[in-house]
Image (cartoon, rainbow, N blue to C red; front, top):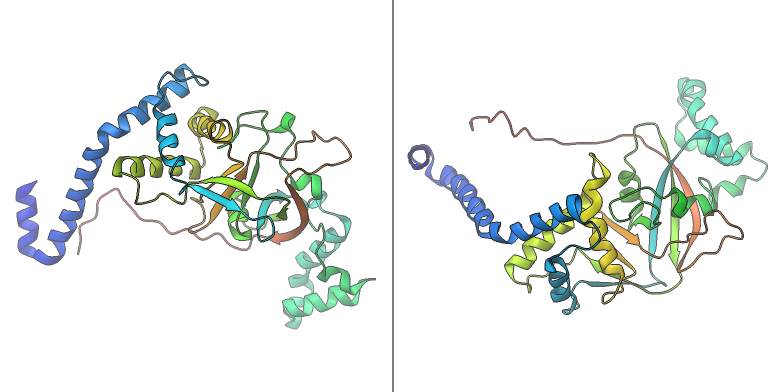
Length: 320
C-alpha cells in the first residue's frame, strides 16, 4: 500500500497525496467507530431474528435518553404556520369527474392542437372557455383523492412501512410537494394526487435532521446511521423495517411521548419527511373525524421526467 502511495505522490504530490489521505482518514474513522457499531449491529440482529418486541439490551434506549435531555432534537411544528404534503399515485378511474375531463383534454392536446402551434397557456384558455364555470379550475379543491382517501390508510389496510408495523396507521408526509411526489416513486406519465395538510395544534417531533455537534462523536455517528435507516426505503422484505419500527414506537411512548419524527429524504436531496403517529384512523367509518390535523385540499400532478445521476464504483477506473 505504501509503495503505491509513494509512487502516486511522485506523479502528482499535491493532488494524489490528498486523495490517499482522504481514503486513509476515512478508513481510520471507520475503525475508530467499529466498537460503537457493534452494539448497533447486535441490536439489529436481535430485533430482526430473535426478539422484535423486548430486546435484552438498553443500548438504544440509553442513546435516545441522552440526546433527548438536551432538547436539541426536539422540533416543534407550529399549527398556524405549517403546511405538510402527502402524495399518492392515482389512476384515471379514481379521479373526480371534473378532473377526468381535464386530464382527457390534456392527453389529447398535443395530438389535436400541437400542429397548430398552441402551447400550454392556450390549453388553459380552452379549458376555461368550454367550462360551465370557468373560475372553478383556479380554486383549491379535491382534484385528486378526496379527504378520506388522502389520509393515512385505515389500520386494517396499513401495511408494514419504514416507521409503522402492520396494522398501525401513521401519516407519511413531507415538508414540500416535490419531496412528497418523489417519495411515492412514480414513473413518467403517472398522475399523483398531493394533499395539503394543515395542523390543528402544535406537534412535537424527534428531529433526525438536527444531529448536533454538541454530542460526543460516537453518539453523533450512531444517530447519523439511524437517520439513514429511516431515510432509506427497504427493497428486500419487511424484516428490514423492524429496527426503525421499534425506534419509532419507542419515541412515541414514555418517557419521550413524541407526536412524530422528522428525517431527511434519501430520494430527494434536501427534502424533509415527516411522519405523524396520531393519524386519522377511522377505518372507513363515517362521519370522518380528523384528529390533530386536517386535509384541506388535493392538487393533481403528472410526472414529466425522472432525473438520476450515477457514479461507477466498480470496475475501478484509473485517474487521468
